[in-house]
Length: 145
Picture 1 (cartoon, rainbow, N blue to C red):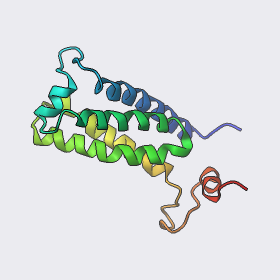
Picture 2: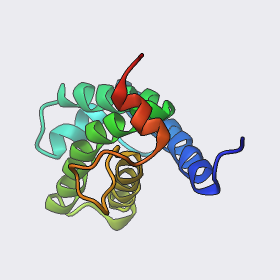
Picture 3: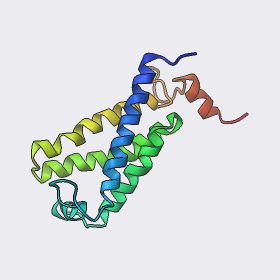
Picture 4: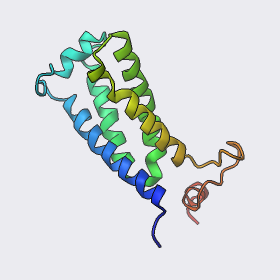
């Protein structure tokens, strides 16, 4: 049985975002900058955060990248990423960063919110108390046996 087209689109989106978060999260652990950008240790301090905070953000991004490629854990990945991305958007706004540096965070925030929405195990038409979104979600909620 083939999966529906919308499911394939979400899967491709999750893989693309996972690659992006592996690269971005991994870069936060590097002691040097990439290209013309200064290292994240300096960027986080310039944004008003302690330098070590980049390790927390980078670690969350790496863990979420792995979870994004596993359909059963996409909602968990989105739950980890949404506050990080919200913080990134607010940080770029507060620091008046150039639009070119600031555009990725809100775009990715919207994409991750969409992934959270379609991965949620409830049927939004019947309210959050109704857990009946998909056969896969129902199976995940029932547990083994």
